[in-house]
Amino acid sequence: MIDNSESELPPSKTRRKREMHELQDIGEQLVQLDLKRLRELDLPEALMDAVLEAKRMRKHGAIRRQMQFIGKLMRDLDALPIRQKLDAWNGLALQQTAWLHQLERWRERLLSDEQALEELGQKFPAADFQQLRALIRNAQKERLANKPPKSFRALFQELQNLIPQTEGKGRFVRDE
Image 1 (cartoon, rainbow, N blue to C red):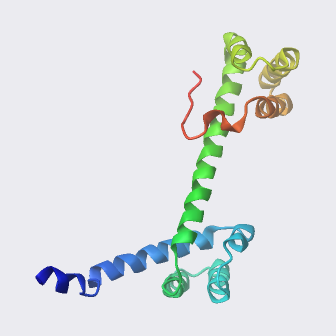
Image 2 (cartoon, rainbow, N blue to C red):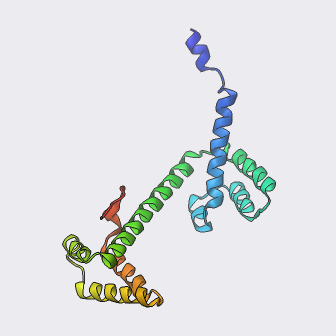
């Protein structure tokens, strides 16, 4: 009988505060988003207005109060879909960052290690070796002559076209 009465008790003050802080944290993430992503979330008008207002604020105290207000507005809606969408976007951003780091590692290896081009060819047989050799050679000359990194950037572009983004999906791939 005691178990029944305990389950009917309202949530503790600590739990309510923790939930309010979580909603406020989600609100802070919303303020960091660009307008395109905010529109994708299809937020209620009052919440959208509050988020946009927070983006315009510059004073710390005003921002803090606005974040509390956003947290209060979020209590009236189901935050789970918003949280899931934010988590999905953060995951995609991490995957893209990992892929870009992988491309940078390949570029540096190609510029410093002569065996790297052969390894790249084994891993990606569709590579245009003549084009890659020319870009590597030109990028190395640019470095030595302190010229603008035109070929250095072109090499990165070529690697972007060659190495699919799904190559390092979900894990950090080290090609060293």
